[in-house]
Image 1: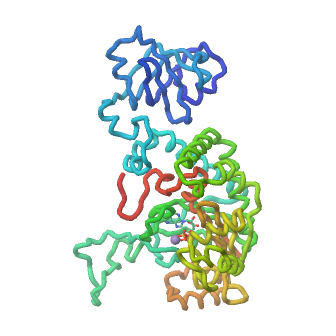
Image 2: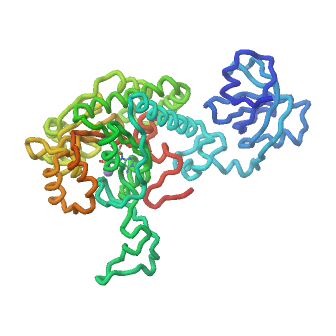
Image 3: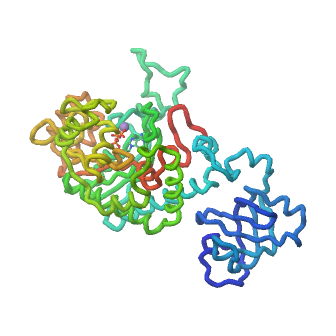
Length: 480
Ligand code: ATP
Ligand code: MN
């Protein structure tokens, strides 16, 4: 007989049939009721053991965490909370656990702090919260590929090891095989990277954008979806040292087209999970409602999780120039009452997360796209506007998260790009291939980067980015 998943059994319409299922025991109650889960759904199937006719020694080995193989009959359930259950005919313990040991882990069925769960990240998907988060993470990545595939984009794999250190997005991790104790030195006493593995300095990529641009300029519409690395020492709840980024890049598309694409894309992927991941979302929504009860009124969420998703899907994103945003912030209450940690005094200031969240959550009360940022707070490749002060950049700001997407129209004019690089001290030899794009059939093109984990945070309502990726990499932490 074929083994069924728990999800399959729970959606079975015919009963009185023989079934087989394998999974892990979540709880074993009254020597009779096993709540069994196999990861296929957040719901457990109840397996009822005929304890009077089951060997005492076997009953003892059915404990939380154990892997079991159950054969039995699927029946309508008498109890509340489930429609069907399995009347157990035989049970085989595949992997047993010492109840003493299990009680020290987060498998012990009770509330655990997220910190404790993080310390046992290899077991935390045995909990409802993390299994729901990780199923949603999987579903979202599927929806992302689906969106691009349906819209004529090609998926391209940009290199993870990069030879340029001028991607312009942050501090990099060096990749080397040189002996750290005794590296070869140049005559000047510097480390001689010409003797390193690649014959030059190499790093882990901070963004696949520059390479994606080269492909957009031949394949038209492309996107990347891969890991990126930033050695920034920012220990926040929104930054990881290793995170996944989605970066579409499109030829012949300007910044307005870029905003339209980003908005349409975000709405598509959010709609996808609302449609396909109801049970996990409902669970996480309830979790947040419970969590809110222990918070002061002012800190509670105004919207439930699904309301928040609908809110993004149903509203047009408000498009506001950086200059307008600065005016709003300068005249805002928290600025005047000196409530912001960083006060906004003048045009040119970089926006902090507190400002982004004020604009989204308090002022506009809808997702916001800020555009036309000052040139000197944005990367070198963004297209300079006529005013020569601002660039065609855009950031999308979401409630609770702040910046979720960063993008721009790229500078396609060779002379302007060269001037910009010279001003910033980026050597042309480093990016000769990038400059070539502007020599051979240059064209308007644009793209954006979406931090995948920020999207997963938004969808799951998890407050810390460490809880939406299986094994978070952050400063001072690379366990597992
Ligand atoms: P932030 O100001 O939040 O640090 P950024 O300006 O450095 O972001 P970009 O370089 O524009 O971000 O990267 C594109 C997207 O990648 C961001 O909009 C964000 O969603 C995500 N992102 C950036 N840095 C991180 C990080 N360290 N961890 C997780 N996601 C990140
Ligand atoms: Mn950053």
